[in-house]
Image 1 (cartoon, rainbow, N blue to C red):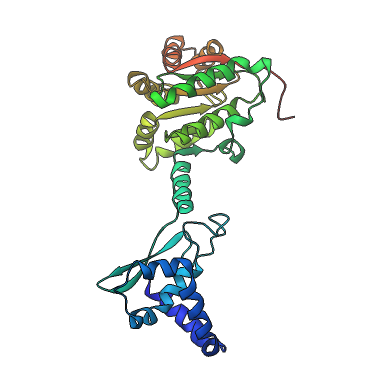
Image 2 (image 1 turned 90 degrees about the vertical axis):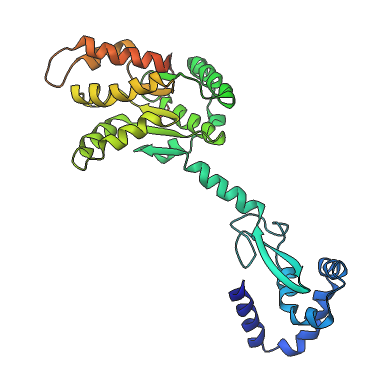
Length: 309
């Protein structure tokens, strides 16, 4: 706190009216109800000690105490943003210290919570999605019901199954993922949102810098995994079996949920996954992926108007 004291003294010394205002300021400080109470509670304080620490008393008087004069954290009026002054007496000497105000605590908690949502290539409007803003319509009633059922359970523990949202382009499937992720954040549950086509490219690029195993391990173990637009990516047997299959197998065994969005139903996705980039058909290997998807999620169909038009 020494730099603050020095700055305050310098300001006061450079003020042309300081000398003539000193007596008035002293009277105002000593007449302040909080300062009067502080002095009354510490009768051992001498007049010399009080005069010597007038700057500390003035500093305490002029600042907001636990946000009582600050409309928000961003508009904090205190010398140290987000910190509230505390006067104390130790060994008959006045000391001024600072503690975090409740708005700073809330701000830091919000930042920590924001870090619970991680994303690979998801747009900001999805990361800011709010469950309360989801509009109810009959075409999406099943999706809303299953989403509500999942969120109702998270305070007792994360359910073992997520949701596979299938339906046409633009009906709000990805928005549901963002809204769910933000609700999970409020419960201090981490989530990872991944746009599948870019995810495929990310994993192929990770082979070059040997980070692929570390990334796979992260996707395996995150509390809630969300894969957006599965089936839209250019398919390869390597990604299907070594990457996607490995992640889903682990999460199935550990009973960790996965959310999906897709323009394909699960049955149609199986047909899509069976077609390799070499032109062959591998129904058995695709079937393994589909069974894992069914173990970690529940399919819900979504319909309605295209909300992106």
